[in-house]
Length: 347
Ligand code: SIN
Image (cartoon, rainbow, N blue to C red):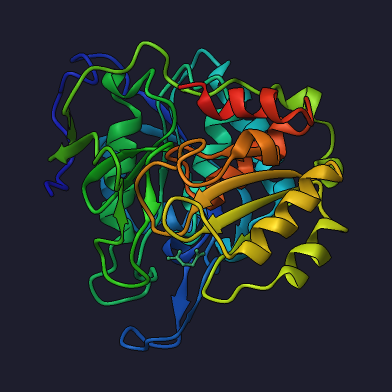
């Protein structure tokens, strides 16, 4: 990727000040540090946003930057409280007429969940780009600087608007709805298994493969203020299906949680024992969503399981981890399986 300071491009007009891009940092490997540049172990969320920016001086040729440290954690420790604070800051920056776009730096492990949450809770009237790295900031050939450079280039670009939150990794642009971390290691760790990436960066210009959809977020918008404080949000757990899955784990979770998402085998299926336990949970008022552990494809109603009779909700194309987010937010409005299903069907 071309990392030389940018000449005038379609993202800015000659003689005009560079666009203002806000960078909100939350930690992750992109801010990770090793004991030595060749060490395979490191601590995520170690350097500050100022240090991260200073490592990419070429950013000064792309945009004026305003930075904020929202958190500094490995994203395996991302919390709903951080999500709430982040969504509030993104919303405020979107309302600021001086800001052209927003970048969120994030660990890659739960990046797709945060992106999806922001898509459901933030208006996204301006470009909103999430970015991470697979190698720590101190590694030989760290990918963070190039990814960050591409994220800022994308966030200042008008064509990145109205697509909901975008994720850029390794030069590929994904939507929050589709993107998944699909590999535990390697630089090419992100994909959009159902629809495919929506574009690529060509130097500092995004090349999108299509026009933005008419409705940027296919799902309903959830008002942050109406959600209340994060500790009061409905609790939703994920049950991972496998051969010989027994009822006891589901019975135990059903006593503790408001909702359960089945990361089911195939098209959201599970053992008879597990399905009976989930049906029992649904009868007791626990919302039950069926998703698939396969990583792609569509979980529809009624293919192998009578969802209507069981009171289940089918996740469609959403992964279990994204279905958990939508169910949690949906449960702030209703416990009715029909209304919850309508939220999942809203595309
Ligand atoms: C994390 O998610 O914070 C650690 C892994 C990564 O960022 O790649």
